Amino acid sequence: MSNVGYPQTGLTADDFYNKAVNQKDASTRRRLFADARQSNLCTYQIYVLAAEVEERWNQDISRIKAILEKGVRVFKNPAGQGAHCAEVSATSWHQQAIEAEKRGHRKTAAALKEVIDKVDK
Image (cartoon, rainbow, N blue to C red; front, side):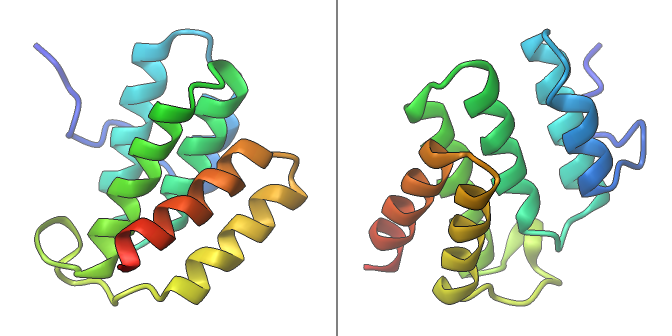
């Protein structure tokens, strides 16, 4: 039985990143991301951190973009998962791209800028 989708750890965004960035097992990283999303429903930055973890382990630009696109879409029109959350502006997402680049995650930053432009159209 899978526990994905049910928070087992009550992870903060920082706890998620610190645990996931050093986790070699992809399925464990995905579970940590699911736990962190459930524990931080209105923390849109969790998607950027997950993309950074993906960049660190796989450098798979399509997976990085998929993670970021889901986050941008959830917080563009917060219904469903983010129904009780405020909409996140493109400006806020662009700020996250700048922060990701400062942390050395150039692929994540570039992918986020591309996703923002795609979803904002």
